[in-house]
Length: 223
Image 1: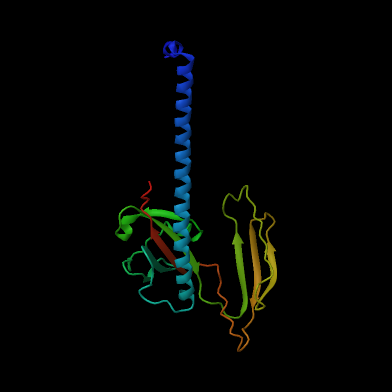
Image 2: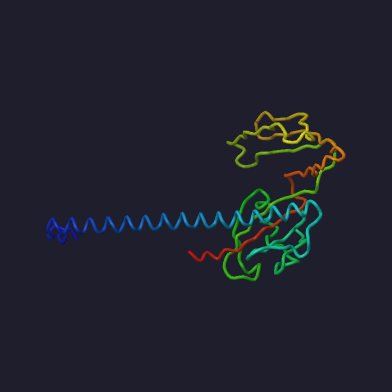
């Protein structure tokens, strides 16, 4: 190989170097473009699924969720309770078995978005699954929110604080922190809504009493 290279003229060497350099540049650019397009498409899929999940969670919390659950496009929606039982579903979704297995639900509750085999929804290819948690409206009285850092607690600490509530119905009564900076407990009080104010019931955004699965399959056609 070295002898062959030395036999080439200076012009031939420069042409070969330029050709290989151009090919390498096109290859790197193509790979980068493919990665960017894949991330953009995945983000679009996630946004659409989360939008549907939020709408379904709002209806579920208000007790106005129709059956079957209305969806648009190629979406599959299941409303699952804290024990993993399917309570509501969209047309074409399994009404007996949750799209996510029992071992997958804890990670999904913590915000992890994942791909599962399309055979669970009778489609070909992988499907993208997102999960949104919702609780029924809270009644007036004292309540508590607990945050605990359970991820690499040996080296990680949290940076969290309770801000001024947007509603005058919510009053922060106190915050409790542990010495290791791994747990935060916020005590708050929810005041009754004033008659005639038209205020919507305050719904907790944390919890897993009702789990909404907004699944939108993406067969990765670009792959």
